[in-house]
Length: 208
Image (cartoon, rainbow, N blue to C red; front, side):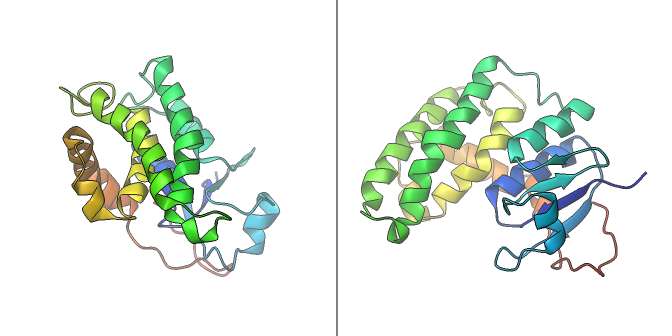
């Protein structure tokens, strides 16, 4: 049986969380690293919208990162990532919606019609304050071990933090800062951030 194919870009937070879930589920894939400025024809044929990640299995194409996470974990969930309340899915929806919108307006302010990065940073920070409160007295959002919400959201908090890391570290959210630091230092995160050569059609399969 052919391995599922994962089109990915190392620094994309959406691709990061897909890789995290596939790693947790212990599902090997053929990793195809792409350059976003030169997307391969095979990826565009599978998913014309042209964003990563894209997972191509023998029976379907999944081109939303959260759907890839759920697909992988429903195949195998040895770490219990899906053992979360409905509120975890609602939290992820907030991260993917209002928080990500504000994050993009903060990070890419020069691309917006009326740039006001301070305003959008402040709006996004309200979500981070909520996360900080959830982490009071526990290392992860839903208890003592990382689960779905942690891994779906952490790559975007990392992206936010690295816009201005000095500012982020100066804020009064110690629980959140520790959570993010632990995430970035974790063996799982380090493992999914290994660099892959850019894939070309004549590249041999690389199972990861």
